[in-house]
Image 1 (spheres, rainbow, N blue to C red):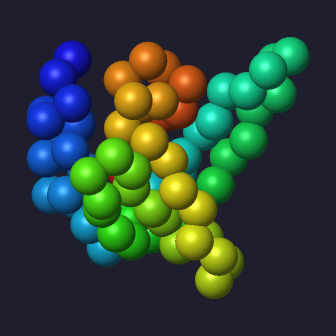
Image 2 (image 1 turned 180 degrees about the horizontal axis):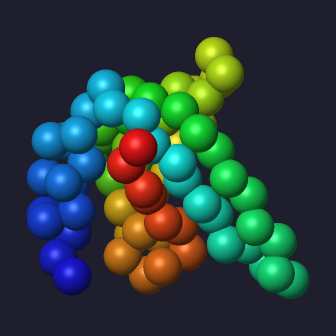
Image 3 (image 1 turned 120 degrees about the horizontal axis):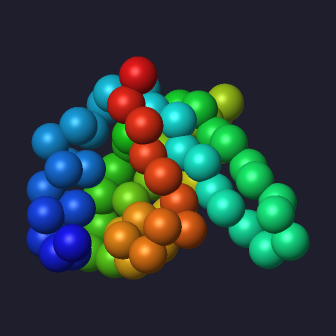
Length: 70
């Protein structure tokens, strides 16, 4: 998967509801539900309960996070 494809996919869905699942160390899984908020050259952010959370495109490509549109 190419990083430009991921950036375009995220940018095309700005201001839509998403669930971001983060797969951490030792089988720890975190889920954040919010709105795709902003994009930057290396990261994108979601607004979840008034708090801005940031995630990298690289983590999406490697499978550390998954983004699901609602």
